[in-house]
Image 1: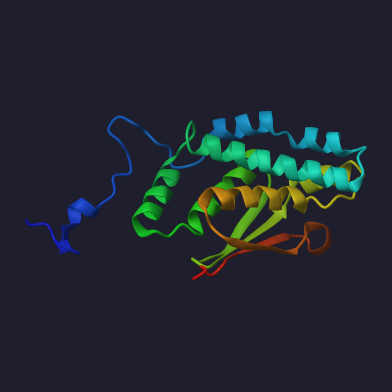
Image 2: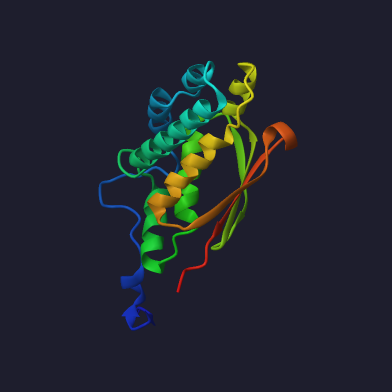
Length: 197
Protein backbone atom coordinates (compact mmCIF):
# COMPACT_ATOMS: atom_id res chain seq x y z
CA UNK A 1 0.00 0.00 0.00
CA UNK A 2 1.39 3.41 -0.91
CA UNK A 3 1.35 6.38 1.42
CA UNK A 4 -0.82 9.33 0.50
CA UNK A 5 0.80 12.63 -0.35
CA UNK A 6 -0.15 16.00 1.05
CA UNK A 7 1.63 19.30 0.44
CA UNK A 8 4.46 17.55 -1.41
CA UNK A 9 5.47 15.23 1.47
CA UNK A 10 4.36 11.72 2.34
CA UNK A 11 1.68 11.84 5.05
CA UNK A 12 3.80 9.48 7.16
CA UNK A 13 6.53 12.17 7.35
CA UNK A 14 4.00 14.73 8.66
CA UNK A 15 2.70 12.57 11.51
CA UNK A 16 3.77 13.44 15.05
CA UNK A 17 5.32 10.91 17.38
CA UNK A 18 3.91 11.56 20.83
CA UNK A 19 6.37 9.45 22.72
CA UNK A 20 9.97 8.52 22.53
CA UNK A 21 10.95 4.84 22.62
CA UNK A 22 11.28 3.75 26.23
CA UNK A 23 9.94 7.03 27.65
CA UNK A 24 6.51 6.77 29.23
CA UNK A 25 4.45 9.92 29.53
CA UNK A 26 1.24 10.07 31.60
CA UNK A 27 -1.94 11.46 30.09
CA UNK A 28 -2.73 13.67 33.07
CA UNK A 29 -0.96 15.92 35.57
CA UNK A 30 1.42 14.07 37.85
CA UNK A 31 0.57 14.09 41.57
CA UNK A 32 4.19 15.06 42.18
CA UNK A 33 3.54 18.42 40.48
CA UNK A 34 0.73 19.14 42.93
CA UNK A 35 2.81 18.06 45.93
CA UNK A 36 5.82 20.21 44.96
CA UNK A 37 3.77 23.31 44.20
CA UNK A 38 1.75 23.06 47.43
CA UNK A 39 4.96 22.61 49.41
CA UNK A 40 6.54 25.73 47.91
CA UNK A 41 3.43 27.89 47.36
CA UNK A 42 1.11 27.42 50.34
CA UNK A 43 -2.19 29.32 50.19
CA UNK A 44 -2.49 29.13 53.99
CA UNK A 45 0.98 30.60 54.49
CA UNK A 46 0.19 33.36 51.98
CA UNK A 47 -2.95 34.42 53.84
CA UNK A 48 -1.10 34.34 57.18
CA UNK A 49 1.59 36.61 55.74
CA UNK A 50 -0.90 39.26 54.58
CA UNK A 51 -3.13 39.31 57.70
CA UNK A 52 -1.53 42.35 59.31
CA UNK A 53 -0.66 44.28 56.16
CA UNK A 54 -2.49 47.23 54.66
CA UNK A 55 -4.41 46.59 51.46
CA UNK A 56 -1.74 47.88 49.08
CA UNK A 57 1.02 45.80 50.69
CA UNK A 58 -1.26 42.75 50.75
CA UNK A 59 -2.08 43.17 47.05
CA UNK A 60 1.63 43.41 46.22
CA UNK A 61 2.24 40.18 48.13
CA UNK A 62 -0.68 38.44 46.38
CA UNK A 63 0.72 39.50 43.00
CA UNK A 64 4.24 38.33 43.89
CA UNK A 65 2.83 34.98 45.04
CA UNK A 66 0.83 34.59 41.80
CA UNK A 67 3.93 35.24 39.69
CA UNK A 68 6.07 32.78 41.65
CA UNK A 69 3.30 30.18 41.56
CA UNK A 70 3.06 30.33 37.77
CA UNK A 71 6.83 30.38 37.26
CA UNK A 72 7.17 27.26 39.41
CA UNK A 73 4.24 25.55 37.66
CA UNK A 74 5.71 26.24 34.22
CA UNK A 75 9.17 25.10 35.26
CA UNK A 76 7.89 21.80 36.68
CA UNK A 77 5.27 21.17 33.98
CA UNK A 78 7.79 21.62 31.17
CA UNK A 79 10.55 19.52 32.68
CA UNK A 80 10.24 17.15 35.62
CA UNK A 81 6.49 16.56 35.20
CA UNK A 82 6.00 16.86 31.43
CA UNK A 83 2.94 14.88 30.35
CA UNK A 84 1.54 13.74 27.02
CA UNK A 85 -0.79 16.76 26.86
CA UNK A 86 2.12 19.15 27.28
CA UNK A 87 4.15 17.38 24.63
CA UNK A 88 1.26 17.38 22.18
CA UNK A 89 0.29 21.03 22.78
CA UNK A 90 3.87 22.16 22.16
CA UNK A 91 4.30 20.06 19.02
CA UNK A 92 1.00 21.17 17.52
CA UNK A 93 1.83 24.84 18.24
CA UNK A 94 5.22 24.37 16.62
CA UNK A 95 3.75 22.75 13.53
CA UNK A 96 0.75 25.05 13.09
CA UNK A 97 2.06 28.32 14.51
CA UNK A 98 -1.09 28.53 16.67
CA UNK A 99 -0.26 28.98 20.36
CA UNK A 100 -3.46 30.40 21.84
CA UNK A 101 -5.47 29.18 23.66
CA UNK A 102 -4.00 25.73 24.29
CA UNK A 103 -0.51 26.55 25.56
CA UNK A 104 -1.78 29.35 27.81
CA UNK A 105 -4.76 27.28 28.98
CA UNK A 106 -2.51 24.37 29.95
CA UNK A 107 -0.42 26.55 32.26
CA UNK A 108 -3.48 28.22 33.81
CA UNK A 109 -5.21 24.93 34.52
CA UNK A 110 -2.06 23.30 35.91
CA UNK A 111 -1.41 26.26 38.22
CA UNK A 112 -4.95 26.06 39.60
CA UNK A 113 -4.79 22.28 39.97
CA UNK A 114 -1.35 22.32 41.57
CA UNK A 115 -1.94 25.12 44.09
CA UNK A 116 -5.63 24.57 44.85
CA UNK A 117 -6.46 20.94 43.98
CA UNK A 118 -9.95 21.08 45.51
CA UNK A 119 -11.07 24.11 43.48
CA UNK A 120 -13.70 23.70 40.78
CA UNK A 121 -13.21 25.45 37.45
CA UNK A 122 -14.49 25.19 33.93
CA UNK A 123 -13.41 26.44 30.53
CA UNK A 124 -16.63 27.75 28.98
CA UNK A 125 -15.13 29.02 25.75
CA UNK A 126 -11.90 28.19 23.94
CA UNK A 127 -11.25 29.53 20.46
CA UNK A 128 -8.12 30.82 18.76
CA UNK A 129 -9.28 34.33 19.69
CA UNK A 130 -10.85 33.98 23.16
CA UNK A 131 -10.71 31.85 26.28
CA UNK A 132 -13.20 32.07 29.15
CA UNK A 133 -12.41 30.52 32.53
CA UNK A 134 -14.91 30.22 35.36
CA UNK A 135 -13.89 29.32 38.91
CA UNK A 136 -16.83 28.30 41.07
CA UNK A 137 -14.96 27.16 44.17
CA UNK A 138 -11.79 28.98 45.22
CA UNK A 139 -9.62 27.92 48.13
CA UNK A 140 -7.84 31.29 48.27
CA UNK A 141 -11.10 33.21 48.50
CA UNK A 142 -12.36 30.81 51.19
CA UNK A 143 -9.19 31.06 53.32
CA UNK A 144 -9.18 34.88 53.00
CA UNK A 145 -12.83 35.02 54.13
CA UNK A 146 -12.19 32.62 57.03
CA UNK A 147 -9.35 34.88 58.17
CA UNK A 148 -11.81 37.79 58.28
CA UNK A 149 -10.02 39.68 55.52
CA UNK A 150 -11.55 41.64 52.66
CA UNK A 151 -8.84 41.46 50.01
CA UNK A 152 -9.19 41.38 46.23
CA UNK A 153 -7.69 37.93 45.66
CA UNK A 154 -7.96 38.49 41.89
CA UNK A 155 -4.53 40.14 42.17
CA UNK A 156 -2.96 36.71 42.60
CA UNK A 157 -4.82 35.15 39.66
CA UNK A 158 -4.22 38.02 37.24
CA UNK A 159 -0.51 38.19 38.09
CA UNK A 160 -0.14 34.45 37.47
CA UNK A 161 -2.02 34.72 34.16
CA UNK A 162 0.35 37.49 33.02
CA UNK A 163 3.34 35.20 33.62
CA UNK A 164 1.68 32.41 31.60
CA UNK A 165 0.95 34.79 28.71
CA UNK A 166 4.54 36.05 28.77
CA UNK A 167 5.81 32.46 28.63
CA UNK A 168 3.63 31.56 25.63
CA UNK A 169 4.18 34.92 23.91
CA UNK A 170 0.44 35.48 23.58
CA UNK A 171 -0.55 39.16 23.66
CA UNK A 172 -3.78 39.07 25.64
CA UNK A 173 -6.41 41.39 27.02
CA UNK A 174 -7.48 40.02 30.42
CA UNK A 175 -10.76 40.89 32.07
CA UNK A 176 -12.53 39.69 35.19
CA UNK A 177 -16.27 40.13 34.75
CA UNK A 178 -17.55 38.16 37.76
CA UNK A 179 -16.31 37.44 41.29
CA UNK A 180 -17.11 34.61 43.71
CA UNK A 181 -18.04 37.03 46.50
CA UNK A 182 -20.54 38.97 44.38
CA UNK A 183 -21.64 36.54 41.65
CA UNK A 184 -20.83 33.13 43.15
CA UNK A 185 -18.27 32.57 40.41
CA UNK A 186 -15.09 34.20 39.17
CA UNK A 187 -15.05 34.64 35.41
CA UNK A 188 -11.93 35.58 33.49
CA UNK A 189 -11.92 36.37 29.77
CA UNK A 190 -8.70 36.29 27.78
CA UNK A 191 -8.85 37.69 24.27
CA UNK A 192 -6.02 37.68 21.76
CA UNK A 193 -4.97 41.16 20.70
CA UNK A 194 -4.78 41.72 16.95
CA UNK A 195 -1.23 41.61 15.60
CA UNK A 196 0.27 45.03 14.99
CA UNK A 197 1.10 45.70 11.35
